[in-house]
Length: 217
Ligand code: HEC
Image (cartoon, rainbow, N blue to C red):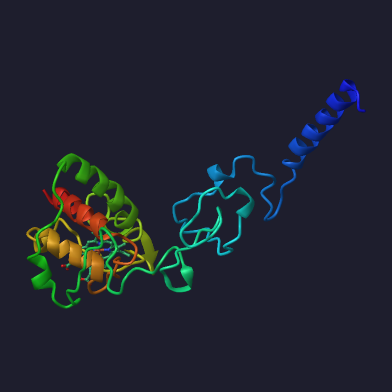
């Protein structure tokens, strides 16, 4: 017969051992989980598929229709039982604005009105920041073609820019260009100016266009 004290000590050792066993974790071993239902979501987990139907059998208390155990997390209706599927063909991502006007159709592009609505001040504030990042070094802070890249380099005694022929956006030739025109030039480039369509999101391009118009006033 074990006396009470030994029983208590044995219980203490056992409890301590179980608690400490839970501390052992590393690599793929998450350690002992005391409330696994809290870690293993019942919803389909797109990034952590569990294909083993018997995973978590020891815990299973519900009779799942397809006979799997607690941790099983795979969508049996999908190919390869994937939880996440590829988007359907021709799916368009949110906020994507299709733009298929060819580079040489500037006149057509110029007729497109800006889709930006709402807080004018906020649009111009964003436009200014973006202009300073993407345009200022050539076109200058006020659009007068006096950016760092466009001026100040002396070659054979003649002052000229590294980047020749930058347009003075305040010049008469550009006074009446529309936001659609500016959007198109930013997107596709024109003449000596390279396109910026791949660097700047469509929304940001429209913001810059609005800001350029405000510079011209
Ligand atoms: C590397 C220098 C450079 C950068 C950066 C640059 N541009 Fe230009 N831009 C030019 C040059 C050069 C021209 C003249 C193109 C030509 O007619 O050959 C030009 C022309 C333009 C024109 C006139 C287009 C027309 O109808 O003739 C606009 C509008 C314009 N740029 C806007 C912008 C905006 C907005 C940005 C910033 C997103 C920008 N540019 C960035 C060099 C630059």
